[in-house]
Length: 365
Image 1 (cartoon, rainbow, N blue to C red):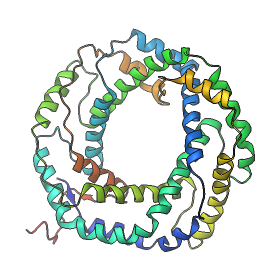
Image 2 (cartoon, rainbow, N blue to C red; image 1 turned 90 degrees about the vertical axis):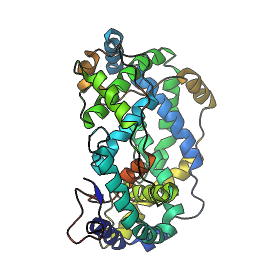
Image 3 (cartoon, rainbow, N blue to C red; image 1 turned 180 degrees about the vertical axis):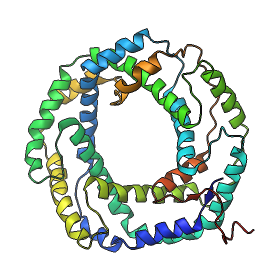
Image 4 (cartoon, rainbow, N blue to C red; image 1 turned 90 degrees about the horizontal axis):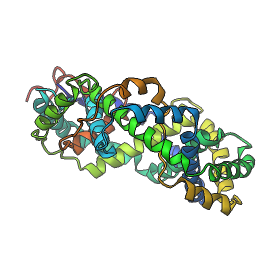
């Protein structure tokens, strides 16, 4: 069973109340530009895709995919839907392919309707002063992640702003010279990647897609799951989504800037970590980019796809399976459960208990 637990919700709320949230809002100076950094990072991501597509690993994967019996009908949207079902299973303990799925869904939604609205109202009030600040810093952290991945530079390190212009222009110029051949490797590798993701999602749902009977088993399970009905979640999805996003952004600040907000000197540590990041944002807004390199890079990278870093480990296993008969029926979606799962994943240790706790008002109803 999967019960949204009031005790765990209260524990998570108490932990958040112990953080210096009120002081966070004052750490963001006005006028820090984030749009230029976002646009530059889009181009850096594209250049990284081209580089990956022409790497030795990508060529190996493309050759492997060419010999594999992969489906030409598998869409990324189908994979994403199955991954959402796997996330529901991982975060809420609800496997929609289980014979007990209907009972599990009912218990989760009904217990959420009883316990979540009051906690969510307190949480919304607690986070309200931080929403704009968290959203802006989230954009900076996204740029920080892209620059670190593509250039190996940490935007939150003192002095890095001075190195950005040369590094970014060099990266874009390299991408412009890679040519359209990148797209061929990337397309084949991306198809294999999609099958690997599909296999992993099915494994999380208890189906070995690589076994001889895996595809028929998946099709049968999807047809049964399509008949499941979920009660209505009383808390609106938009409200739950906003809370989930804010909590995720708060967690990202701590993990990416390596600042533990539980420490007594957390605000001083965070201010010191944010200062060079703000300087990097300003530097990226004033970069003198080489237009020819950017436009050429965009032209040569259109249609290319990213190569997963974890491809090589299990690519051979997936490529050896026969997916030629794969034709998936409609995949059911449970948006309320998916959002509840995402919300739960942002709170430690989660909000779900295997069954109603002793003395719980839900358990004695």
